[in-house]
Image (tube, rainbow, N blue to C red; front, side):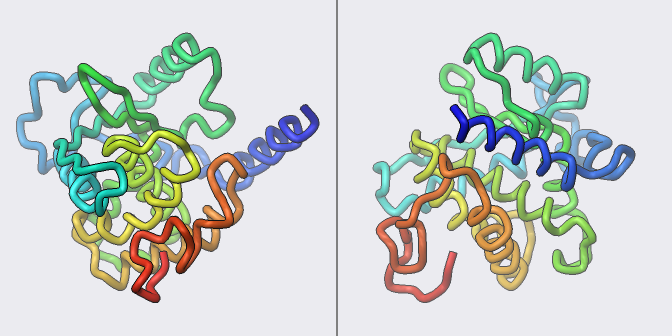
Length: 232
């Protein structure tokens, strides 16, 4: 009980310190990508599918190296407006009996059949849109921490989509997919390594014990590339 209370306090302080100030790009939501053209029949003012993010998730389902058995499912990623995401959080609470917590504006989730979609909040979609469209190298972006966080979120949910269930292995494997996802979103190998390294040092190693484990390390039991010195 005491540990849970302490962790809630940490999450609250984390949110106070790191959530972008009101009016920042990430906090403003975003419109459907110009690359989506006319959109799909399931688009609405509150949400829309982002095909490029879905393609990035599909990369993960093809690179699982047999960890969960081959799963080549086509990724589907839905971005939500600010108002739409409030409704999604309320649905999550009713369905699961828990809330998405103080960082709910930065937490996505995966839903199962029949739709099988990754649902992302506007903050995360805004940062991923920046990754797709900003010509500056990621290390020159003043919100690079949130770029790393958001691509890690997409990779994490992509691992759920491809068959992982428990949070600690999903987080470990998802972190190791950041470079592949970044490449699919048009970033260079150097940028992908930078984002993955930042995620490892600043996010994973400081995260909840529910999401990390000692075996998640270079050469560890959950290293997807044990014969390579590159980590993550």
